[in-house]
Length: 196
Image 1 (cartoon, rainbow, N blue to C red):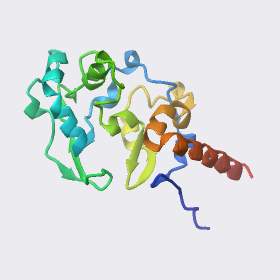
Image 2: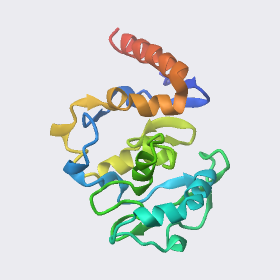
Image 3: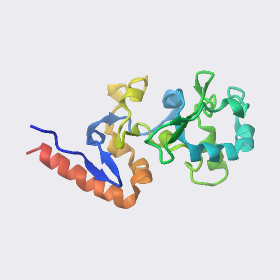
Image 4: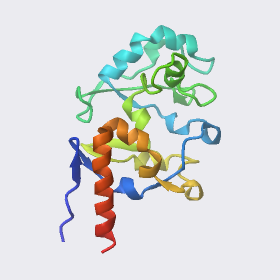
């Protein structure tokens, strides 16, 4: 029997795994020191430009575990169809973590937004915001490859909720409130079909 096609919401195919994948019941840096940020992340070219536009402010907020040499913050751009511009720019890893992660496990980009009284995600790349969600080949799904590398968030005993339950704010950030409402209906239909 052929698999049912994935539901499409706001141009993204929705992997129903987001409804069932277990995850920790919220982010707590004290448990992991921001381990999900150790490997760097891909940023949209426009996100790269925004970050570089505030480089002096970023340098001012960095600690001694981070490089203040802004020419060492990013990899060379690559083509990637999952980004609107078709271009992705990876953040570099420095001292075993993303260049923007401080020694306490906090993101300098998010700290700056908080200090400025702005939206906490104003300067963060989308893929930082989304973890453990990801958009891959046009599918809104779980970044299971990255999740498997986690020492805390990947432990079964701390995975007490689903990604869908924990990441409401992140899902709305991508799909909007109306897209989220449509996703709720899809989730209900999915479980109804599953329990037949």
